Image (cartoon, rainbow, N blue to C red; front, side, top):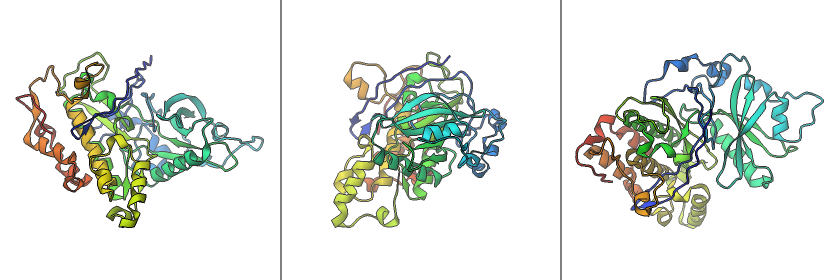
Length: 406
């Protein structure tokens, strides 16, 4: 029985920190296997056959399914199908007159299962779809919305996703697009799990090892993107999917916060990602500053832009991503209370009260977070430097006086 919870999105900046966004999700009782870079992989993962079915992605594609804007736990990706998705790219029954992307997918054998996600501005929707025994996510422009810019955004997202292959980045399989059709759509994997936002508060009971693994995996994906000249531009808790494998995570239960926790992360929703040339990465000339600022405003989520970004206005795509990682890191470490009417306590990051009321940052941990959240981008490390300097789980938290020094 799936259960849906709706959490309000909270936006705040408190002395350079912003609380991370979250959205509640529907969950399935069936476990969803996946790979983890920072923690051991469950043996159940090896039983799945997605990499065999989609051979061109065999090295970098995980064995679970996922979606941009996804907001619920998917059912298992079931193995046993011999289809190859690319084999359906141009095959339609001769008697079928295709008018839109949905008809195109139906003609290829897809079955739509229902709406599972929607963008905050209602411009895009995500449906789950089945082909044979396998589940996919289909991201498309919302009906009734003006095509032009929205369709171009989907094409850009598809192009970005096809240029990358990383086990912590959602995989795109196919673009359904034709000038004669109404709308276009991306067929992509359907990620299991929850959006990261609801897992940040300590009352979600995600163990410390899981929080560290989530941050490690997010950083590994950001490093991969930056090494290829791609800026994520919109990195926050709503665009990170987390599959908690162990212990079984159910709201209301309280597993040991110090227990081992196997997780797998997927970065989703790449509509705002930007690929920058070497010239752009090194900065624009003075005459192009206004154009660069417009790029920032158009492509970045302003709620996660760091201080001084607009004042400097040059070369801030990758540093902005690093700052966003710092916000996620602070949220994973400290979290914040949920469902409180007190504005102060709703905005303040807090360490858990029970049972770890004497938990605090080590000196290494405090230095790491403060560097990521530096207002001056010059003082901020690159994503790779942050990844290499991420303290081990036992070296960023300690038992002692309760404090948070960021």
